[in-house]
Length: 430
Length: 187
Image (cartoon, rainbow over all chains, first blue to last red; front, side):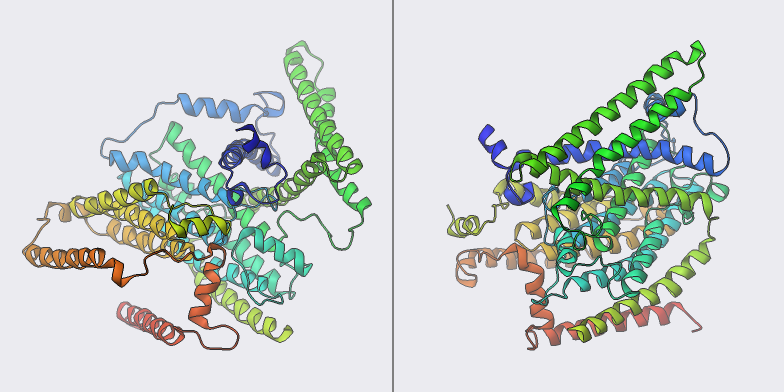
């Protein structure tokens, strides 16, 4: 058994391909924990960033700068009374949040955090991701129906209409990116998520810059459609609080409501990962073919450690700026401890980077490489997550008919045109 | 061990087609299929149908046909069933659930089901002569490319099914246009 576990460490393929169930399970657990932590962090960041956009402070009381607020929220939601309306369809009401959660977590099996840092590499990767994430809307629709109430039903109907419309434009934008993967000497493209990034690597260009501005337009279509797909502002018709109270989850409370939130944020991370994989070079660091000397490799491998060092510095500054009243003693110790923890992580990462440089073929070098891949992938996804918050703070909500008009009369023709032109240019270039 | 499975392992493909997996999926498909016809509530029936479609999709995956699985997921479970639910929610479920479930057509339905069953049994019994005696180990990694080759042709030649495929897509286009014309009085 230890042999079975250790034998994978030198491997260059995903555990799914290597047939190593142990590491596949480990990856699943790591991704599940990582996504859950990311959702909590996102929850905090969204409240703080939105507050700062509106010149408020946001959560300040629970922990230093409200850092423990997500934990307090989670505890509150778990302890809150879970109400099922008397006239609701009990079983469907119970199963609806699980459908959404299952759909948004299943797609993580194929998300490539690195060339071997994924649970599995499927030949149909991108189709699988889009297909499973389109199942997530079933949870919303069914939840709205099972509540047996007017606002949730209207929210669910809006949501399903919206998702069906935007899925078309989204799919066509994805197809034009997949078409670009076929521009190699073999002439066959790939649907595998890892294969898509590798073909960007071979062609030496991120697909967002390919055939400028074609790749850019396709990316823009996807970036708009993915907001509609995840029901986020300014396209959050399904839960427009000024019109529908809270839309499809009006009747939900406690843990079940929090499952909806978890599913929504997990789906946001998942669609951002699709955008990063298809257009932004996935796990690749910036300028891999321009700055490819070993010295540059080393400089870029310092980035993860330096990021954590920066976070530690911010936490230290926060500790120093804390009022020196005895009321703040616990908070000061807590934030100082957090800074020390972040600094320790930074030191470990820097040590791995240094060790990876000195011995080229060692396990440390492999590990260093893996950290680099995951770091760049997560950084790109994090930019998208911040954009989601920014959009929400900046743009007013669309009206439903405007949303439909944009989806069918603007985005669909543009994405169809981009697809056709990409195909023509691809043939001409060849 | 089955030679096909052995060769599949030799070509670097782990055997996913374990009998246990098959029986779970098949059982799930049958149980939810029964639920589709017996549930009074239309939404429950639609949800059961989604489970059926997904487990049949799992069977496609076991047959090393990942592309068909993805299409099943995308088109049937994701798209068509969503429209089903959409329509069911708009009609009055209360009234329809009080109606008789099995009308006078049950005899015809039973006859058709028996005929289909007989067909399946005969295919199962005569299977040795109708089909090759062992599974052809298709490489999973090029499944999509092979389908594309059959449908669109490769290396300048027309594919084996290009004509049929184009006819089918024309038929779908006609159906879409027909739906638009029937619903929209003024175009």
